[in-house]
Length: 528
Image (cartoon, rainbow, N blue to C red; front, side, top):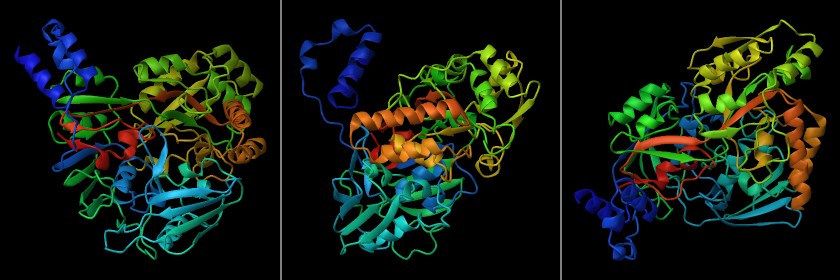
């Protein structure tokens, strides 16, 4: 009965849920031995504890990384960024916008003007008190004609941001935007002190941790901010973020106790990790999707029949089964996930159809052409395998794909946005507007298909300002249809977030807006 006693101890101390207790007891054949009184006993709350060094082994770092949030590209800097800084608004585990540096807000009836009241008494790491000028300076860092910020596409609709006294910030937009709270929650739009000149090297923010050291793409060390303004957050003494690009190396580091959490598990071996003592798997449905973007400004991808042929030449079911091992859902060549509010479920699911692929390739006059698909596992875990599998699918339609394996380091700087056809991933965004604005709008910095479609851009602008929910949905459905049928991207699958960590790690409901609990695990999680 020692096993049962241990389960009862964990249950009554609040370290496992009632559901987990019953599931484990059932699996061990111990249900008959459980006292009925135990299940009616009040359970202790899982109270967070302070202490320890939290070590993250993270894919998604590069030697070109910078502390400038305008340049953040992947998981390493997203997580480090939110260790150091905060946004005006935070997205909670249910996907709702909640106050962060802004304690409240109001919008005009047409939602073209937003007024944010800032929290009082919030301090930066250097002792400066947060005020409205800091917010104006931080947001303007991403605006302007010559801005190099990846967030430029989502801040372009802001025509003015100004301080109204010390604690009030007023945003004026070119048109109404019912999703503006999600915009100011974006990981690029964290707040730093007014006048900061060395943003790329300066980690000063209002976040739960202070920067100790930073080696781009390799290692970051932060320590708890003793003056952190959020009650019940930032529990670890230190957070060490380690860039480990290779999936096997991350897995071994976790199994040997060198790290406490890894992202992007090798889905082929998750079933083995589940059997390792003192480890846990964290799986969350989110908006991450795998893509194969084509530069529509470059021949032959400027021909929509070529693009359609390649969309019909991929077996999505096989991708889901063999690459994701079932940890996800089918994609339909647009970036809006099934879990999102305005997902176009009524659009017919595109299926593998070699005959249609042949038809469109013949119509384009491109029969016999070889297409180079540039890839690396830096794009996503299993990207090389996915490209090879795609090659096999396309061959049945008479389409030749040459898989070009690129170096892991520098992939996002030297291959993505540069080569005509590549593999890529997107974590997605909380709203349809954010996703489309950052990667599909005509002038978006991360428009990796270089696609410009007048009707799409008109619909996107109209949907942003539409307050009637039914009409708004119709507009977004049409946007998804246009991207699916005329866009330059193959989107075969949406992937669940699958991470593995020490069983010592404790947390509440895990968010799915980004990986690793919305990239907030460093301040939300704790050690038992």
